[in-house]
Image 1: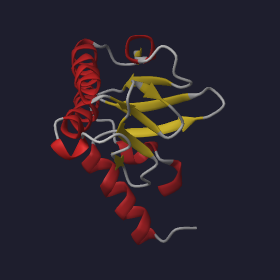
Image 2: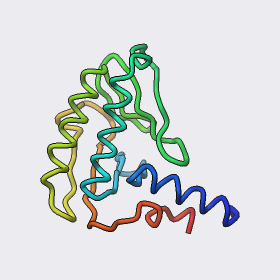
Image 3: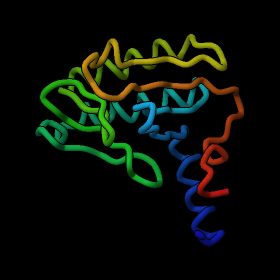
Image 4: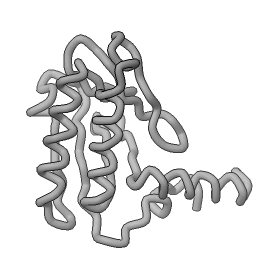
Amino acid sequence: MPSEAINESTRREWRLLGFYYERDDEQKEWRILGTREGLGAFAHQIRKYANDPASSQISEHVHLGPYWYLEIGTSSAPEITDHWIAGPRQSLVALAAEIEIRAGTAKEGEALTFKAQFSPSSPYELTLNVQAEGFDPALADPECQ
């Protein structure tokens, strides 16, 4: 059982990130939970990675969140797998733009999926769940309660 200091550090990292994520291997899905602003922060992380010249090599990647198990990376074709959301940098920029557009007009409670547009043959879905204003991503993490 983590100490309260570790739990508080984890909660702080979720709040700085602005969204919460989880992977459901049974459903083969990455779920990103956040307000419209939080989902915009997710898009920002993707765009920031894609616009970094250091991201040009295949297999380059960054880890997101306190547990670092979601990766955004560079691959030769768009893909969503059990460890990352990856693709050529221009595909990642397009994904970020699509997330911003759709999340910006989404309604609370809506689930937005991206596999069909980004990488139809990927084994995993990318689902963004729009939460109500005031959503605290740290409270979605059962590990740090």
